[in-house]
Image 1 (cartoon, helix red, strand yellow):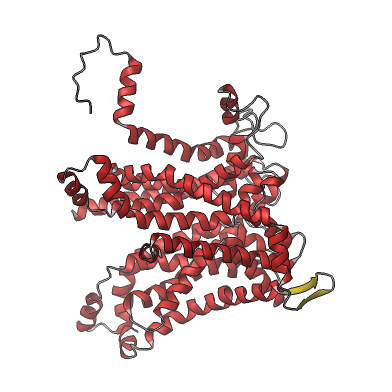
Image 2 (cartoon, rainbow over the protein chains, first blue to last red):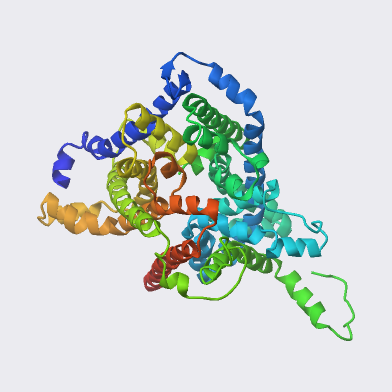
Length: 289
Length: 281
């Protein structure tokens, strides 16, 4: 096979690519086309939908569900920043102080992924419930008024999102910190930089690809999430994912739901591009798998 | 840190010395707290799998029992949901790994036109929110009048697994030495023998890693499955349905079991890797 492949070297890569890329073309690219087609249809489930260039679907999606769109970006943004702040010190600690325990510590970072997503979110429901440990402690510390809640608040939703996507942030951070040549930091110190200054001027810039990758890997799934808002939030905490989900699967208002999906994807794409401009495309392409 | 000499304090209390320890090891202490936070929900899941709940909601601790583990399939629908999840994960990970390995081989070993498009096609599914992927597949299947069920779930899972397989295999193929294949052929091995005896063993760990990753991603998927399952119920869908009326402790049992199995597999992997690097150095 290999020699035969060698003889037709020009064709070989395409034959290796064909089955997988063909599958992705049919079941990833074409469906996006159908989603766009559906988003411009009008009608209803009983009488059928017809393609009418119904751009109004997009307009009403934005005007009717502005709050949910804004909330999605807001919650996902806060959760991403929290995840970055929470996991950077730990990623640093594992990369520079982990020693021979590195692999084990990394395993602990990804451990939450081994518990089904829905089950670990339900565990937070238990932890944050009204007679759970956290609420009782906060009431005791007078941070929450007696009879106060955490469940069904925006705090609970953001906390859930932060927790659920934390490993997506911590892992790329670790990878980029791990690759830093220790001698660069020593050089900075030899040149009379304080520990803090060496950290700010050398370590942080060198870890930027990890920050970019982690931010994207956290923000993108977080913005489309509806599970945390459903299980830990109240209806007033619902995100755009909740609306898309219910329009598709409960209300069968396919065109509106398809339009919202496209807006969500477009908003994320624009955000990613602006972000890439801000931090430099080099970092982005470095992080692109 | 202090440059001014401080006269020795007459007595250092336990609190003071503990505080001094914390200050010296801030980062370590913080990391320990971080891991406690990270692992807390897992501990809760496992602990409550041994709880005998009062009423429908398994929220508050009542009484220790082994019954949930003994009667793990004592809730209607849970066993068939687990079986379906395992079937889908097994098939999807095998198919996606085969397709993904071929793509990774092409990307790592050949220069060809269209590399940019290929990379884009691999990267896009990873950067698309799951809900958009689920919704777009739903509209495809709706418009083409597919019957929702086993096959639509399987197709959806293969779709989101392929990119994971490519990334996972490619990461481990980068150091692949092609001279080994050429050496085998110089020694008279034909192409098939070379592939079977040289290439495949060399990339086997990469393939295994991709299989495991795809399996894990597939068995955990909720969103895409939810959009494309019809009336079929996988384990995450079962949990979703059960959560609305109070999830039975058996859900915790299965969650704990998946966790223990996955972590054991990973621990073995970490152990083997550590020994291998030790042997190498």
